[in-house]
Length: 356
Image 1: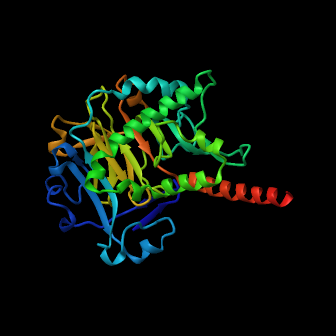
Image 2 (image 1 turned 45 degrees about the vertical axis):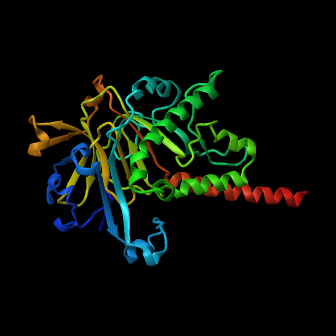
Image 3 (image 1 turned 180 degrees about the vertical axis):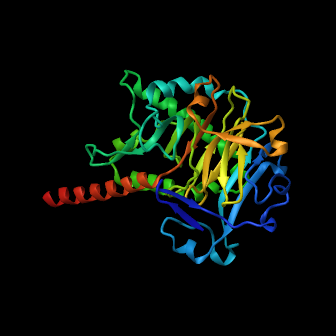
C-alpha cells in the first residue's frame, strides 16, 4: 500500500504483516500492532534481521524497480527489501572520531541548519565523498562530479585521497557480514553503480576517469558516501533511489547507542534497530518507510518495558557526545544527471567527428 501526504510531499510504503510472517529468531523481540519494538541485533540469534516480500505484478511493472536475480524458474519469487546485520568481531583498533575534523574542514555540511527543504526534516552533520549531481556543466558538458571542497589548499588531492580511503575502509568492514549471509549481495543490490562506472570508463576521457579513481582506495561500487554526525530525520519517508542504501556504525568513542533506525511497517506497527557499533543496514529506500532517530528512555530498562520517546530537535545536537555512522546510496537525481551528461557528451563527439 502506498500513501501520499501531499502537504509535505512525502511518500510512504506500507506492508501487511502477520505473526506467521515473523521468523522464530525475531519473534521474541517483535510484537505486531506495536510501535516500540526496539531491537538490538546483538541479542538476536544469528545477529541479523531481514524483510522480504513476494513479487507481484505491480512490483514488476514499477519503473523504479529493477529485479535482479538468477533463472526465474529457480526463483523463490521473493525480493529482499531490508537486511540488518551485527558484527561481533568488528575491528577495535581504529576509532572514526579522530577523522571527523578532516571532513568538517574540507567539506560543506549537507544538512546546513536553517536551510529550506532539508531532507525530510534532517538535522545534524553530513559530509560527502564521491559523486554528486551538479547544476552547472563542466568543460566536458557533464552535470555531475565530486562533492565541492570548502577551501582550496596546496595538498587538496592528498586530503581527498585520505577522505576516500577512510570511507573505503569503513565500507569494506560494513559489508563483511552481509556478504557472508548473501554472497554477491553488493553486486546485485548496487548494480546500477557498478554498471554506471564501467559505462563511464568506456566513454569518458582517461584523464577524467583518473579523477574518479583514488589510487588503491577506489570507491568501486559506492559512488557517493557520507559521514554523518548526530543525524536524525523527523519525517518517516521513502525515496526515489535506484539502488539500495547502506548504513554502517563504525567503532567510536560513544558507547551509549542512543540512536536507532526506525522502520514504519504500517499505521499500526513499526520497529527500531538500535544502531550499535558493528551494525550494517542495507535496504531499499524506495520500498521501506524509514528514518533515523534518537532514542531516549523514559524509564530505566526501557527496552524491556517497550516505553521510549523519539526525540528530534536541535537541543540534542548541542551535547558534546557524537554519534557517527557512514551511509552510501545512488540517488535518482545523480543517475539522471549521469544519463543526460552521457547523451550530451556523445552528441558532442558525433558533431566533432562530422566536422572532421
